[in-house]
Every structure is written in C-alpha cells, then in structure tokens.
Amino acid sequence: MIKDTRWNSRLILLFAATALLVISTPPSDASTFDVRGMVPVADRNIRTGNKMLIEREITAKDKHEENMREQGRQGDDTTATEDDGVLDVNELPVRYDEAQLWRIYNISESMSRRRNMMPLADILESKYGGTVWKENSKFLDVSIEKNHIKAARAFLENQNLMSEVLNSNIQELIDQESAIGVNMTQSEMGQRTKKSARSGIHWKDYHDLDTIYAFMREIRGKFPNICRLYTIGKTAEGRDLKVLRISENPKEYKKIWIDGGIHAREWISPATVTFILYQLMSKWQDHPEYIRQKTWYVMPVMNPDGYVYSRKVNRLWRKNRAPAKRSQCLGVDLNRNFDIGWSGYGSSTNPCSDTYRGESPNSELETDAVVKFLSKRKYNLESYLTFHSYGQMVVYPWAYKAVKVKDAGVLQRVANTAVQRIEKKTGQIYRASVTHEVLGIAGGGSDDWSRAALGTKYVYTIELRDRGQFGFVLPPSQILETAIEGYTVVDTVAQAIQ
Image (cartoon, rainbow, N blue to C red; front, side):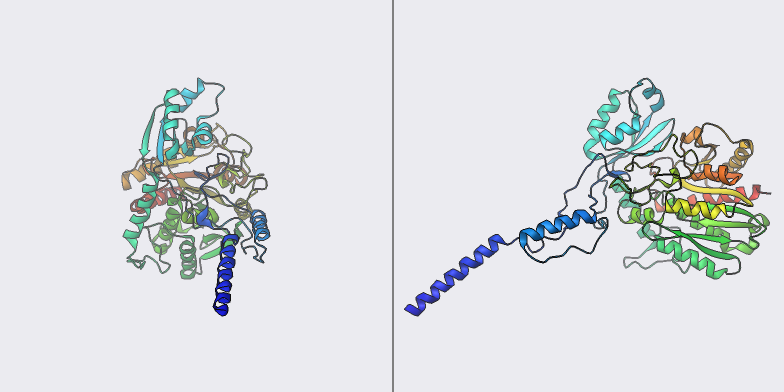
C-alpha cells in the first residue's frame, strides 16, 4: 500500500508539472515570422504599384528586434531567420477581387471649375484606394477597390463627373489571362504543345524573364557573325540588363534602338519586342536592304526586377524594385527618371507613388546603364523606339513640354504611314500624334531624353493594344496580332531612314 501510494503521488506530481509546462510554454514557432498569420494592411501612404498594400514589408532590423523580444520571453536560443532584407512576399500574391476599372470623362473641364482642389487622380488615390491606369486630357482610367466603390461613386456624382465601368472584377481579368495562356500553350503537365524556338518562346502566351533571355542567347548562337549579346548592367536585385545587337556592319550602318518592358505590368511590350526580334532574324537574308543594312539594338525588358515581381506577386506593379532611402516603399518609375524635364510636371516626389521619379536624374541602375550604353553609340543613332501599353498610339516628342520638335511634320508623316499600314493589316485603329497632346505633359521620359541628349531623329513611343477594355491585362489571344502591329511600326520607320 505504501509503495502504491508513493507511485500515485509521483504520478500526480508529474501530471501537474506537465500541465504547468504546457500553460507557460509559448508555441514552438512563436519566435518565427509566419506569413500566413499576417493581417492585411491598407495604408494610404504605402502602395505596391496599383494596389493598396496588403503585405507589410518588414526590414531586417524590425525582424531582428521582434525575434529578440520573443527570445527574451522564452529564454531560449532561437536565432533570427537568414532573410536579412525586405520580406519575401511570393507567398502573398496581391489580389484584386471585385475591384473595378472605371473610365471617368471630362475631368479637365470639371476640375478646372474647382480651383483649390487636388487633381482628381490624387483624390481617388489618397482617399478612395484608387490606382491610375491611364490619364489624359479626355479621360481617366482608374481601378477602385471593392470596399471603396460606394464612396468613390458618391464622390464622382457629387462632382458631376460621368463614368463607366470598363471591368467589374479585375481579378477575374487576371485569372482569365493566365488560364487562356495555359490552355493555348501547355498541356496539364506543363509540356509545350508547339515551339517556335528551342528556348520555348512563342506568341500564344506571355513568357518569364528566363525564357526571354534564353531566346536572346539562342539568336546570338544561331547568328554569331552578326549578333552580339551585351550585359550592360545589373538591377538592384542583381539581374542582368541584356541588349542584343544585330548588324552586318556595325561601324557604318545607321542604328535603331528598340526597347520594351520599362513598365513592369505592360506584358504585351516585351512580348512584342521579342516578336520583332524573331521577325528580324527568322528570315534575315530575305529582308530588303533597308532592314539588313541597319544596326539594331534590341532590349526586350528594361525593367527585369519589376517584370519578375509583376509575374510572381503583383500583376499590376509598374516601377522597378529599388529601395528608397527615406521610405519603406519600393521602386522608381524608370520612365520618369531620365534627365529631361526631370523635376517638371507629370512625376512625383513621393516614393510610394507609381510615378515616383527617383532621388535624382538617372539615379536608377537601369536608367544609368541605358544612358551610358547609348551615349557611347549615339553616332548614326537614327531611331529610338520604345514600346508601351495601352492606348493604340504612335507618338513623338515632346512629352515634357507642350511644344513640338522642329521636324514634327516629318515624324507625323512617318507615324501616319505606320498607323495606315496597321489598319490594313489587322483592322485596328491607332492614332499618330505629338505626345503631350494625347498623353499629357510628363518629364523624365526615355523618348524625350534620346531626342534631346543624343540627337536621335525618329523617336517614337508606341502605345500598343488595347483602348481600355482589358488595359494592361491583354488576353494572350491578342498577342500575335498586337506584335504584328508593333513590327509594322518598326518596318515603316526603318524604311523612312535614308
């Protein structure tokens, strides 16, 4: 009996100690940061591209301090995680469920009657969670999140502003874009049903950066005598900036520069530039002299970091991914960072803005690399062609001021020819004009810089499809025809260069 009593006492003590240990010990993972446990944040001062922030970007210092506090409470030896930079948010893709895309009309006339008010775009961004897609003198395209729709609509009605809904669920648009591309180009296991090149590139779907760079290497490998592949710099996240030169006589032939992907969310731009590259090289010997007797510089993706981020995390991200010195917001609008009208109208000093122009002209690694590369090759540089979306326009300088270049008549005639040829080929209507008249005034653009700094004559920004129905999220079924339209502009400009 004494032995049994002692055993029972020991058992009771053991149970009590275990209970106390369970009560007093925190969960085993309390010292680690769990992404799944994050509470979505809507901070009006911090936005990731085109959506109010739903993931908080945490610096290494913040994480270290949090870990130290947890360790102090637990008294254990848990160390900080190895991630010593901005939080990797690949597991938290930004979603746009039931966010709507609106087009608002007569904004200039309406807001001019209200002198002391902020610009309409700024009001919608700061007060109603809006994100500007496209803005000009005639209309404003802006996406509004679900929880702000009622208030934003009431505001517009109060201001007597007319609007229409271009799309009632942006996330559905994004999901459809992805599904259509997969259905057109892949089996369920991810095997391509048809390839146009060993790299796997084709124009039934949008491709990742690795595929685009593999295609450039493939072209260089097939045409080693006339192609040279440059790495002209690195991005903030360490990615290569690649340019392919094509020329039978680079010292003598006149030069044409082509770039795409300066804005990450404009996926149709790199797709079009890679198609142009394919068209140039697939039948090189069959091209007329005005194509073959040129030196071509082709840069499909000027903003690799942003493009990768757009594909993996935030479909509507616009800027690069460079960290700001005085803000947790990331990214600079590279097309506001060139040294031409840099501090003027059309850009922002706020690092959280989609049009943030950076700390100084050419402050960004991407901008600086392009500037240095082309400045050394400005002799015989006759054309600078930069591809964007959307709007279906072929426009020329100036953008940073409301003035036309002296030879605007020549540029207008070539642009007119290009848009006429596009209409005959695909039936699509493009507009030819000076930039500031149709897109408004904005400084820091690569097109204006190439004209002013390099003396390049045939400078055009090509705004590809569409006119707003899909905007940046153009269905893959439209890639090929859009790319043909882009190549039509290139062919027309090349023919105009004597």
